[in-house]
Image: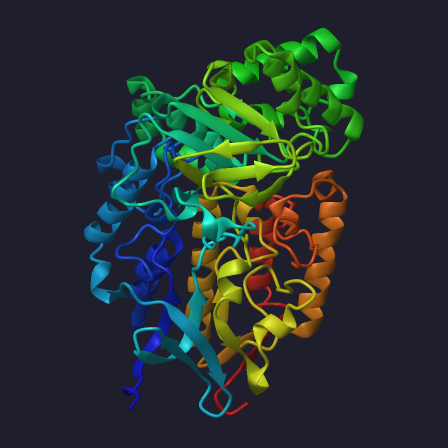
Length: 537
């Protein structure tokens, strides 16, 4: 017999940074809320992703909450780019500092969320048998939280160990003396390959598509930088909020094609030495003009040739099928130099594709390999994966999966027509993965909180995106993406890494600064494009 449903104002799905901050803001509104989380603690991405070398690619000082000056003053980051373990400690510190755990339920996976037309409530059920009724349901499920289910022929026959970067053992793995294969050269592989190579007797990297990667030049944050940040916190935060990426990246309005070649190369070199994403914003025409983009692609290709001693390997590591920056670039420590190690080998899967796993290892069309362990670094079902795995049904029992059969449709990445009182934090159609996620999370949570306060003050029962506003926003997202080079890449931005997933540019490429102003204007105009209803109507 099913247990009676617990009644709350709001159900939040996910206890990552977005779910944590959402709960904090709801408490400030005097609303009752329950956070449901599949993991054993808070942290989301930084709870699940524990593969070797996992760390943030936005500088730690900016990849942190800005809502509490006291929190910022008391937390000290150890490195320019914080590692996973430190990010998880930070999440747990925030949870404890604001006593968030008391309204959280861990090791509980949401299986269904159904809108009840009669009583205007969401009915949420879980794999533990607990059930909830709530006026509002907020999906804080994360953009990169569901790994792709990539399986290979014969994988069940393999007698060695298989590890997935997205489901890494919490106790860690020691590859000392082992012969290891790794499939994939995306972000998690690029971060983990140098670490695994330091341990393994041999490491074989199976690459289908090379990615661009920039050096992190990671290390302790200089004391003067920390002091300047703390003394000018508000100014730094305001500066970041006014940028397209939600972090300060020294954006330039100069054009690459109008800059003398020697000046252009010098600017790329200067930014390469700073490291991280700084090179992305060197010239304003690089993201939108193929000829301009080719100048930075040529520069980075030269860097790869400079670092990697074997010209053939350097050539294989150099992307040739997509413009620079149209896939999310990686930030690494020693990635390209790892291929200079005598025990590290790169295998080109386009020339010799994997045919099957064997009992001993992997067989390609050209060779048999024997491994003690194989690492699958095969990516995520980005932006929609977590939502697709929940049975979400809106008005009239319509399933969100069916509504999104030809690609996700949202208004602002915040709501979906036909699904009243359901919000998605950093959902498809929002800047999200093109930005500093912490900046996008805070902007979304603040907007949703203000919206809920508006609904309460006007005695309204529900809010829903209109079909017309949703259609116009989807068109706008596509139009903005088409103005850039981004759709030219077969990236996870396009859903291209998941077989059968509709090809559609998922995030909003107009910039977080423009998007922020757009959202604020919509709210100021009485939530234009949304349908607000009273209990009677």
